[in-house]
Image (cartoon, rainbow, N blue to C red; front, side, top):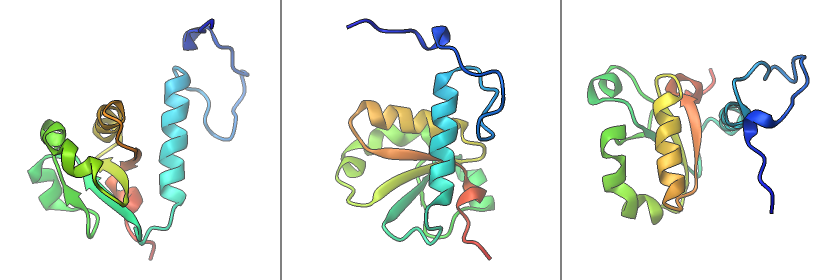
Length: 125
């Protein structure tokens, strides 16, 4: 099977559904996942929202009902997260740390989504 490097893929040079321009294909996937997570029911019914920011950041504000697991300790929670029955959505301040946490968990076979910035997951008024 031949593999094509993502930098070799060609994309139209116009905006596509607000997703262009992106540095690479992985950025497009990341953006689509964030959008998908935001479009889900913001009541979080059936979802476990995990905030991977520092304790100080979490204490300043967080999604009601979310669980705090800092990025630096996410790998220490693999067993409990692997056994989680709810869909896992990871959040942080901007989507970078939650994206890294998501990648780490997915490499361990744990299904999760990057929800991006925690404010995106707040209940709609």
